[in-house]
Length: 367
Image 1 (tube, helix red, strand yellow):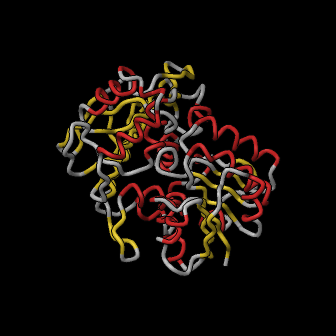
Image 2 (spheres, rainbow, N blue to C red; image 1 turned 135 degrees about the horizontal axis):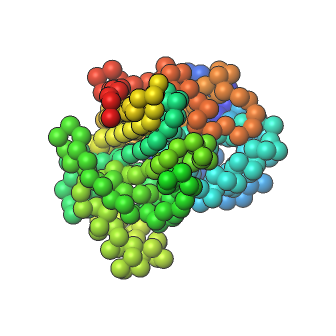
Image 3 (spheres, rainbow, N blue to C red; image 1 turned 45 degrees about the horizontal axis):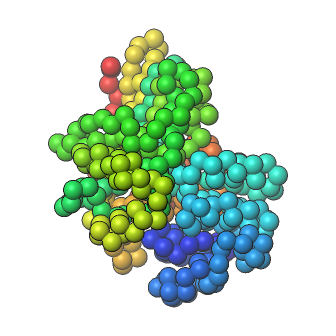
C-alpha cells in the first residue's frame, strides 16, 4: 500500500483524504498547521500538526512517501514543492498561480520523481478536455475554455457563495491572465472581456481570470489563432468585483477583501460546476466546431455530502495520482495536464465523477 502525504486539511484536502482512504489503495498522512482541522478528519488517518512554511522541516515529514498531494494555499506551493523534491517524492498540486508553477517546472528538471502541478478543475481537467478536442483538428482556429463553480440558488448581489479557497478566488481575480490573440501569446487583464451566454435556459457571464489555462498557452503557441480561459459567474458579478478591487483599492489590501467576503458570503454545498470547452478549426478542409459540456452537482461521498467543487477538484488530483501510481504516466520529470489522456482519466475510479452518463455531452456541428 503506497503512502501519500496530503498537505492541507481544508475543504479540498479533507475530500482528497476521504477519496484516497475509501479506495483502500493508499495509506494517508495529513499535514496541516491547524490541529483543529486535523482533528475533524475521519479516524484511521495519520496526522501531523506543524507549520508548513519551512521546506527542510517539511521534507523530514515527507520521507518515505510515494507522493505529496499539495492542497495548501497557493502562496505555499513553492515551499511544499521544494520539500517534496528534497524528500524524493512525486509531487502534485492544485495551484492556479502561474509564478509558482514556473518554479515547480524548474524543480522537475533536476528531480528524480514526477512533478505534476495544476491537477484540479481549472487548471487541470479543463486542459485535459480542451487538448483532447484540439487533437481532432487539422488546423486550429479558436479554443475557448469556460469554467465556473456556482451556487445553484444565488441570493445576494454578487450572485455567489463561497465554495472554494477565498485566497484562490481573489488571486485569480487580480493576477494577469495568459491568452493567445491573433496567433500571439499575450497577457490580458483579469475581470475584463466579459461576455454573456446561455446554457440550458440559464444566462451566465464569463470573464478573464488568471491561471486557468495551465501550460496550454505554451503548448499551443504558434498553433492556434485564439485561445482564452474565462471564469463563469451569474450576470453582474464582475462589475461588483471590479468596484471592490479597483475603485475601493482592495486589490492592494487583499486581507481586507478576504475578511469581507468570508464574513458576508455564506458557504454552500448546493453548488454546480460547469465545464464548457469549444474548439473550432479545419477538419478535412471544412470549418468545424466541437464542444464539450459537463455539469457536476454536489453529491454524497462516503456518507457525507460534498460540494461539486470539492468533488471535481479532489477527484481530478486523485485520478492523476492513481494514474501515476498505476504506471499510466511518466515517473519522472515535468508532466503537463495535456500529457494525461481524457479517456483514461474518465475511466479512472476518481475521474469518473466527471463522467456521469446523464450529465455529459459531446457534440460536433458545422460552423
